[in-house]
Length: 510
Image (cartoon, rainbow, N blue to C red):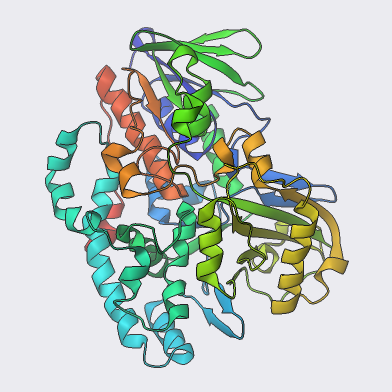
């Protein structure tokens, strides 16, 4: 595209969705300015550092459906491996109930054998699950790659083929009851609903494909942490000629009628643009950044939001080499724990805990002979203003005691030399609406056409990316949201593009 006709694009927020859109649009011939309020890229996929040389991912700790990320880099003429070092984790995760543990694998034969070892008589159910959910994933996946701006979108032949899987009142937990009898084994295939911040007893049945994608395609660690993906995208964006401005918060978008003209920055400067991509947290952006066209807070609060996460990042003076890379400790009464979370008011003492002990795969996150632990416990969002400041240290201690009791880390609390806690209140204060770390809930009433559109409703040239728009939360779908909005911008301005397609080969193998 000749320089005199290049359209200018402003991307607000350098999270995974904003970085994807900025990278693709810059490579497709636009002049892109990417602004980020923080001093580093990544948003919830950024790096967190503690004194003493400890490094953590703020949010996501593994990558699934890697081919989605591969496609983004392929569109820029490179391979993801040119930028990042991946480790395919096998086993992927240890799942523990009090007294019982199951290791998960993406090798189907090893997974079948492990299930049969721990839950005798369940192998056939697993093999049937993988076969039938494969067909379901093949039908649904193409529907996650297109926008839904009008009801006519539902007439798409691909969506019509997938609708029987979508339009059902069954839950993910209901679906797993078709394959397994033991409640613990059902949970081994339903806890992934937590990636959406939802209960498996209420999460729509179509999301049973989440566990399928893990057991079929595996999960990956990125050496140095998943935050390296965000940095790699930012580096590629700048190398392609894009402008990245850190520590540059937006005060509000500027618009007249149906057209957004750019943004007024907090420092008083104005950035003009022919189109704007918004990667800020959806609830925060919609209620704060659009001036007189912002959504009233009371209306936004009527929407259903995901749960939150109580986070503990620990720097330790030792290494636990016999502990797994990923470990999930289920609550004794998991159903009650989930119900407490869904109440948005009750904080469970019987909590579930996720632990990442990355040093067993990647020693780069801590000094030699030391390690860092990433600990997450799903909990209530901040809708009702729970007093986390008054109880966070005590709650963190309960979590650490549970880890000591149920893992080999018996002296964990004595080994802590650095600690950082993030509560739902902290998430909210960092511009995450209601502290709902997984964004809008993925209910049937907040999906596809009923979810905030990729082209922001009410505007001709404003686009949304991230977990609050279609296709939803989780790194692969957030990358896809960035690509969908980039495609829409290209179509608006008549700019041709060639989409990379690596997924079709994977779908054919199902």
